[in-house]
Amino acid sequence: MKICRFHKDRIGLVQDDEVVDVTSALDLLPQLRYPLPRHDPLIAHLDQLKEAFLVAARTGERRPVRELAFDSPVANPGKLVAAPVNYVKHLEEARAQKDLHQGNAAQVRVIHETGLFLKATSSLIGPSEPVTLRFPDRRSDHEIELAVIIGKRADRVSAERALEYVAGYAIGLDMTVRGAEERSMRKSIDSYSVLGPWLVTADEITDPSQLDFELKVDGVTRQKANTRDLVLSVPELIEMASRFYTLEVGDVIFTGTPEGVGQIEPGNKIHAWIDRIGSMEIDVT
Image (cartoon, rainbow, N blue to C red):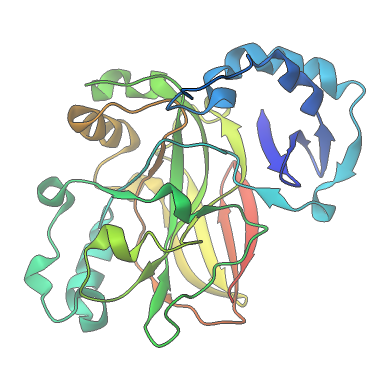
């Protein structure tokens, strides 16, 4: 099942080249009062909503995918977790290019040593919104990544059971501005976390370690790889993250980017594709 958010307050099922509006199924969600939960309510009730989505799809309005403006498929993540240099060739690339390591290649360490980092949830957008360069005088780079959406509260979960805690997958863009500041600060700029175009439920991708993906800028391929090349796999990333902090429902894990990261400039158009998920295009302003 492919579940999307569009036009700010609508929920849809993606079926071939169409989206069928199933927003009426959200009436099943419990009404919330203060204090609000830390998790995303839709993701928390996804199992119950699936059947309601299918029922609503029988009569829901259908519209072509190309006509819709898609939002992030997760509206209220508690946190965005990200994996640095989680592909060997990107590690080599980061050490070799001065622009990427700010003249201190020794600080580009393997993920087993650095661990993970957090991005501000305020940086999250969907593909219908542009990536806006806040510091046009500095280099900003694209990084395509498989994004994992957590479906059950995960506290000290083993890698062997980690995939049981996944609600689904999406395409993620972990944008970054280069500089001397801490990584989490440079990657938390408004619009520097892109998620989309929809959430593909975990039952449709039983093995996230065999997915081809590609990123193009203005039609030119910049990054192309397969998730089999991850240093730490999706289950291992969930294990690592949940050792240090509880993963709440709706939290998003950006799993890392391969080699080929490159600078973007206003006017560019980014095309991102991941096998079995789909594709999305994002403008840069």
